[in-house]
Image (cartoon, rainbow, N blue to C red):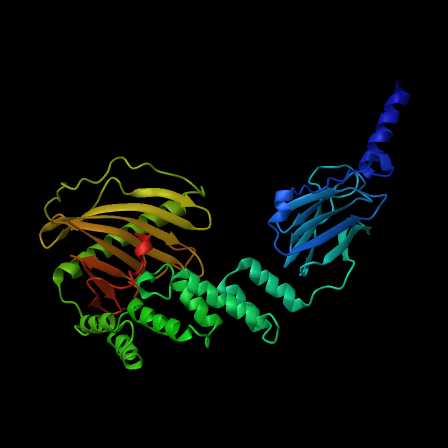
Length: 442
């Protein structure tokens, strides 16, 4: 019995170390059907072989083409697969199984750019020098660095990616193709039609302007960008500069209307001023509660269910300026110093009970972010607001600290008209602004 036990122990150790060939991990060939091969327009053959080694014979090498698993190789194994010509990221790693003996192999990555009709051969294996390390050795000359870099940009297929490639390899033969791809991407996006422009797709305008500052669509993207920046932070000067540069521009009408509104100067409407002042006080009360929760709780994540929702027909006690509703409370606290809080309240605005419903956001970091986003209702009219505050930068903040002033990105709509805070006072916005600032936060 003891001899049998010793025999099986020896067999197990041999299997784990992989010495005798009878215990080597088998090679699993990639499966490519006739239908799969027919959709490859510019095929190239990839052949990979694995060296034989006395170490790690029980560990199959897992082969990846990018993030797609292609097959598995045992020692002395080999297989071939077809793929589209272009950027190749070949990855080889050890099977993710716990084994006795040597450590699991490290992952090896090799990048290349095969041309159509070609064949690339790779040899993989193990080097044992204190630990097992996988290596991949190409059996042919590697493609130039600019081809490999272009392949990465091609795989990402974004204007930003092609722009970075053109900056890094300005003399590459692939630059013309990168230019063509940039032009195609912005044309296919539909953003060359001003009726399709909005806050969410302005990024592609900026990306093109950065990648192709002298491209064929640069004049259009430059004009869009200047008008967008003017409306994002509306001032008399911003719209005057746009109209001076583009006297018959595509945004001529909107720019003139905006200029007329911003020229009115400081808003004196007491209803608006009292509304934003009440919203600020509500937000500051909420921030104080959030800081207290954060300071007194050791949990990184917890939830509090509100006891009831705010009632639209609620009344304020005599002499009460602001009253937080039972629905207010910390709803969710997450790691990385991010806190969200549902904050509802009633306020007295010129003798009328006004209801505020919104969410308070606080995210602590190098530039802490404090915002209050929601709706304000009175007289059966519901308007929106976005208030952004100076950040709380002190990580050891005390319970009495609150954000200081509003930032220029803040805005409120009142009876269908939008008002912006420019850092000093409120100014009129358009009745129907072309770009709806922060509309995706509502």
